[in-house]
Figure: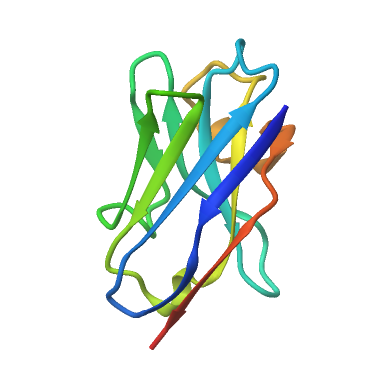
Length: 127
Protein backbone atom coordinates (compact mmCIF):
# COMPACT_ATOMS: atom_id res chain seq x y z
CA UNK A 1 0.00 0.00 0.00
CA UNK A 2 1.19 3.52 -0.79
CA UNK A 3 -0.33 6.68 0.60
CA UNK A 4 0.30 9.96 -1.16
CA UNK A 5 -0.55 13.22 0.56
CA UNK A 6 -1.05 16.59 -1.11
CA UNK A 7 -1.61 20.09 0.14
CA UNK A 8 -0.21 21.81 3.17
CA UNK A 9 1.84 24.96 3.18
CA UNK A 10 1.98 28.19 5.15
CA UNK A 11 -0.91 30.41 6.20
CA UNK A 12 -1.65 33.11 8.72
CA UNK A 13 -3.75 32.42 11.78
CA UNK A 14 -7.42 32.32 10.91
CA UNK A 15 -6.75 31.07 7.43
CA UNK A 16 -7.59 27.77 5.75
CA UNK A 17 -5.73 24.91 4.14
CA UNK A 18 -6.82 21.70 2.46
CA UNK A 19 -5.01 18.38 2.61
CA UNK A 20 -5.78 15.33 0.55
CA UNK A 21 -4.45 11.81 0.68
CA UNK A 22 -4.93 8.92 -1.74
CA UNK A 23 -4.16 5.26 -1.11
CA UNK A 24 -2.92 2.90 -3.81
CA UNK A 25 -2.41 -0.83 -3.87
CA UNK A 26 -4.12 -3.33 -1.59
CA UNK A 27 -6.82 -1.09 -0.18
CA UNK A 28 -9.80 -3.36 -0.72
CA UNK A 29 -10.01 -4.55 2.88
CA UNK A 30 -9.54 -1.16 4.47
CA UNK A 31 -12.02 0.28 6.95
CA UNK A 32 -11.23 3.98 6.66
CA UNK A 33 -8.57 6.67 6.53
CA UNK A 34 -7.46 9.39 8.84
CA UNK A 35 -4.87 11.99 9.80
CA UNK A 36 -2.33 12.38 12.54
CA UNK A 37 0.07 15.23 13.15
CA UNK A 38 3.37 15.78 14.88
CA UNK A 39 4.73 19.10 16.05
CA UNK A 40 8.44 19.57 16.84
CA UNK A 41 9.32 17.99 20.16
CA UNK A 42 5.86 16.49 20.63
CA UNK A 43 4.25 13.09 20.28
CA UNK A 44 2.37 12.21 17.12
CA UNK A 45 -1.31 12.85 17.80
CA UNK A 46 -4.63 11.91 16.27
CA UNK A 47 -6.49 14.54 14.24
CA UNK A 48 -9.42 13.00 12.37
CA UNK A 49 -10.79 9.76 10.94
CA UNK A 50 -13.33 8.80 8.26
CA UNK A 51 -15.07 5.39 8.30
CA UNK A 52 -15.96 3.87 4.92
CA UNK A 53 -19.00 1.85 6.05
CA UNK A 54 -21.27 4.66 7.21
CA UNK A 55 -19.34 7.87 6.59
CA UNK A 56 -19.03 8.55 10.30
CA UNK A 57 -16.13 10.65 11.52
CA UNK A 58 -14.01 11.16 14.61
CA UNK A 59 -12.11 14.30 15.57
CA UNK A 60 -9.63 15.31 18.21
CA UNK A 61 -11.13 17.80 20.63
CA UNK A 62 -8.56 20.39 19.59
CA UNK A 63 -9.78 20.49 15.98
CA UNK A 64 -13.49 19.73 16.31
CA UNK A 65 -15.58 22.44 14.71
CA UNK A 66 -12.65 23.76 12.68
CA UNK A 67 -11.51 20.73 10.66
CA UNK A 68 -13.65 18.54 8.42
CA UNK A 69 -12.66 15.17 7.01
CA UNK A 70 -14.50 13.85 3.97
CA UNK A 71 -14.15 11.16 1.37
CA UNK A 72 -13.14 11.56 -2.26
CA UNK A 73 -15.60 9.07 -3.73
CA UNK A 74 -13.72 8.78 -7.00
CA UNK A 75 -10.91 6.88 -5.30
CA UNK A 76 -9.63 5.60 -1.99
CA UNK A 77 -8.86 9.01 -0.58
CA UNK A 78 -9.79 11.53 2.07
CA UNK A 79 -9.73 15.29 2.25
CA UNK A 80 -9.02 17.32 5.38
CA UNK A 81 -10.40 20.84 5.22
CA UNK A 82 -8.77 22.96 7.91
CA UNK A 83 -10.40 26.28 8.79
CA UNK A 84 -9.73 28.88 11.48
CA UNK A 85 -6.17 27.66 11.74
CA UNK A 86 -4.14 28.47 14.83
CA UNK A 87 -0.37 28.58 15.37
CA UNK A 88 -0.70 25.45 17.51
CA UNK A 89 -1.91 23.58 14.42
CA UNK A 90 1.61 23.85 13.02
CA UNK A 91 2.90 20.32 12.48
CA UNK A 92 3.72 17.67 9.94
CA UNK A 93 0.47 15.99 8.99
CA UNK A 94 0.41 12.28 8.17
CA UNK A 95 -2.42 10.34 6.57
CA UNK A 96 -3.14 6.75 7.56
CA UNK A 97 -5.08 3.82 6.12
CA UNK A 98 -6.89 1.53 8.54
CA UNK A 99 -6.64 -2.12 7.52
CA UNK A 100 -6.60 -3.73 10.92
CA UNK A 101 -9.35 -2.31 13.14
CA UNK A 102 -13.00 -2.35 12.15
CA UNK A 103 -14.34 -0.94 15.42
CA UNK A 104 -15.33 2.54 16.42
CA UNK A 105 -13.48 2.89 19.68
CA UNK A 106 -10.44 4.58 21.11
CA UNK A 107 -8.06 2.46 19.05
CA UNK A 108 -8.75 4.70 16.08
CA UNK A 109 -6.92 7.52 17.85
CA UNK A 110 -3.93 5.34 18.67
CA UNK A 111 -1.10 5.67 16.19
CA UNK A 112 -0.03 2.08 16.85
CA UNK A 113 -3.28 0.87 15.28
CA UNK A 114 -2.01 1.81 11.82
CA UNK A 115 0.58 0.12 9.63
CA UNK A 116 0.23 2.28 6.54
CA UNK A 117 1.35 5.91 6.65
CA UNK A 118 1.80 8.67 4.13
CA UNK A 119 5.02 10.63 3.78
CA UNK A 120 3.87 13.66 5.78
CA UNK A 121 3.14 17.19 4.66
CA UNK A 122 4.08 20.37 6.52
CA UNK A 123 1.46 22.81 7.75
CA UNK A 124 2.73 26.08 9.20
CA UNK A 125 0.43 28.66 10.78
CA UNK A 126 1.91 32.02 11.68
CA UNK A 127 0.46 34.42 14.22
